Length: 172
Image 1 (cartoon, rainbow, N blue to C red):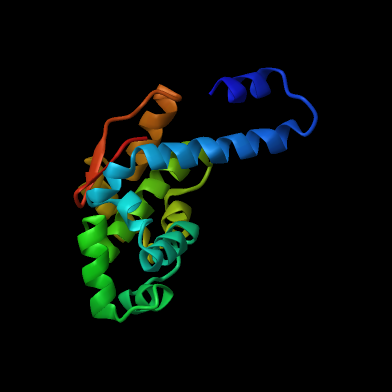
Image 2 (cartoon, rainbow, N blue to C red):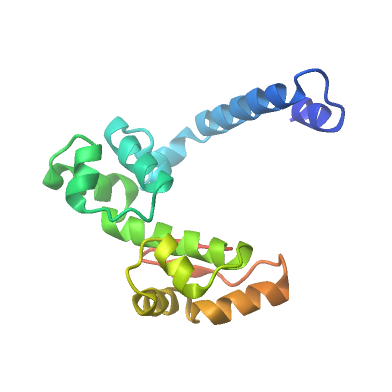
């Protein structure tokens, strides 16, 4: 941490490269130190499994893609049944629920940080209709997406109330 702090406030030659490598090392050490966390269900535990790592990476890289259990299983190079069972046991929620939670979390960030309509956010995170997106958003967070955006703008950077989506808690 001291080396990161020094590099941030007094960068030397190739400071960006040094910061990137120090950050990588810090993350690797934190993951190693918190290794026991991966013994409990969650995305971090999923990263220990090479098959699930491929699926999680694909989901996070493109949450709006029209994923199916079949396409995720193919990404993980497992059968649908094996993939669904392994994902649920390791991550703690079924794959499609995880995707839905990921999309809603991404939607909250877009609503807060981008100047997009609710319909544009819905499309960008993979919902076919604004109505379906708004209904799911409200179910998950207790308020419609437009209201959430206005609240986010009014609080300008303050944390908003937590939301719970299918057993996964998110906060923006």
